[in-house]
Image 1: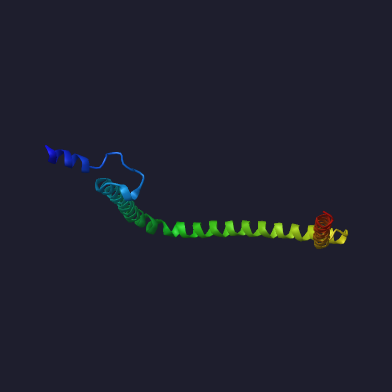
Image 2: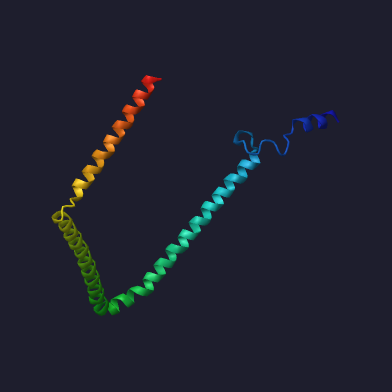
Length: 141
């Protein structure tokens, strides 16, 4: 009877420090490890299924590509050239409008760089004046 009482006192309580990893029981650690392995295994199975599906799809589609290649290759080349042409013309158009707008502002006297320089100089003066006011205010106190 004394042995049973002694064994009962040495057992850990069921809800002791569940969030502390150093105080977790061995069974909790084993369950966590098994869960991680199971999740990793299921991801491995999904990756294998995707690879197998890709191989099957390429096996089925490759003969179709070979049969229709005399039509597909020129069609893809034409679509690619047309797309690149539209993109290039649009880019050149935007660049031309930007240059023309800059030239107009330069001729009318609204120099963009001068405006930016004036704004920076004005802000620097404001900061300088604010700093001097703070220093003179501290010295007067």
